[in-house]
Length: 107
Length: 123
Image (tube, rainbow over all chains, first blue to last red; front, top):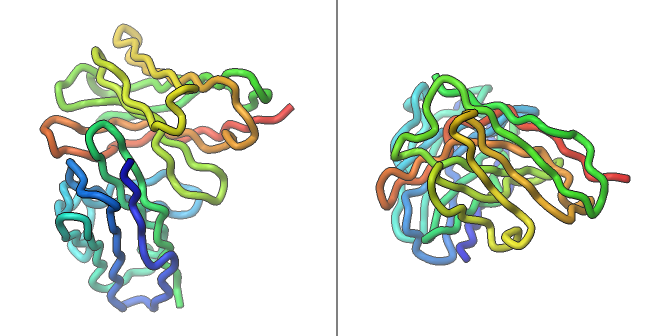
């Protein structure tokens, strides 16, 4: 069973700063990686799919990268609306898993 | 555009069965790339995958819930459902339904999601 470990658990940054979020898989997944953003009281929203492709309407400041068991979500310059929780998600064979989430909070 | 909406009881007693339905509108449930899934989120915690299924295939379940969860699809009503038996307080969560994209071997993402429904397990 795949386990996705996200780090750090909390990232305290100021608007305009660069955010780098990590997602590490316990084994090589069979699928691409997806990232989701969840704001307080809201439904998760697809941010990145196929490891590096932005979903419809997602600004270019969001980018995804990685391969094997190490993946990264980068927000190049934080906007006020980017402070939220971010989850990674993958599939290995027939089992899906989410990471525990990284909270990006205002410093 | 595709929209999903969960419905079902908001309160379930311990040891009973939680039953939720997701109604899909604005599109077909039988596209070859589209699977249908359930995800839950206990209050203040992270996301947990429950299960996913193709409209005409075998469901796939989270191993930790497999013995208690049952997914089904009814394309005539454009709905899919979740049943979770023998619930306890630990099953209290927001339950989301979502479309899962799995058109090719490496495809893997949920989009869109339903708004979610909070189900409490309490006597």
